[in-house]
Length: 208
Image 1 (cartoon, rainbow, N blue to C red):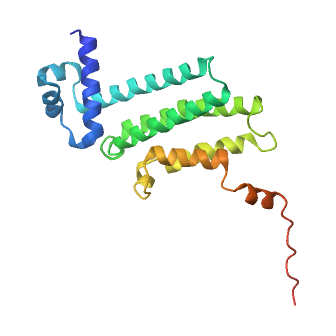
Image 2 (cartoon, helix red, strand yellow):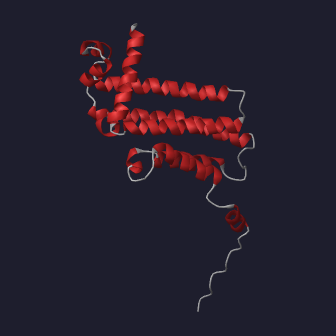
Image 3 (tube, rainbow, N blue to C red):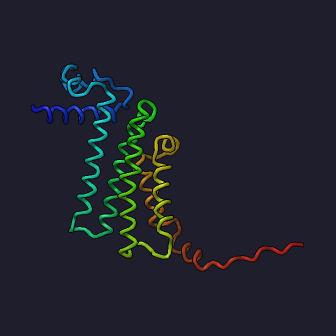
């Protein structure tokens, strides 16, 4: 096994253990034992658990961006298909990341790196996707596109995080799906939408 293969095996095994037990509850010794390798071999590649986590997050972020690019390059699906596939993938990854929720407490500097990546890379991709939707006529042009994008990204950032999710009876993926459904499908029924659009303002009661 080459060093590259060994390193990939360690990252994959550690990720599975972090997701199953939580980052804070897994030791380097347990990672080595779970992979059937010596602690010396593990420390050869990673001097400590925090550096292992940082490299794991960096690798997964690169894979994330590559997957998004692959979706956008596909010629066999239209814009709506690309849009939905992108959001589904972001939701699935958000759900995965929230299984690492103790990172925020144990390794705040790495959590900040993840958060910065989300804001600088992921939300920028989402913004570009929204812009394309407006330009191609998929989204209505009678509403302020900047506000739509801001509402969506802020809703995801505010709700799909460990603290808020701990108070909700749903997973990160389910929360992400609910946000997307509300933004893109609305909360009004067809009857409710019609009544809302054609609603006539009621005059305020006159003072006595």
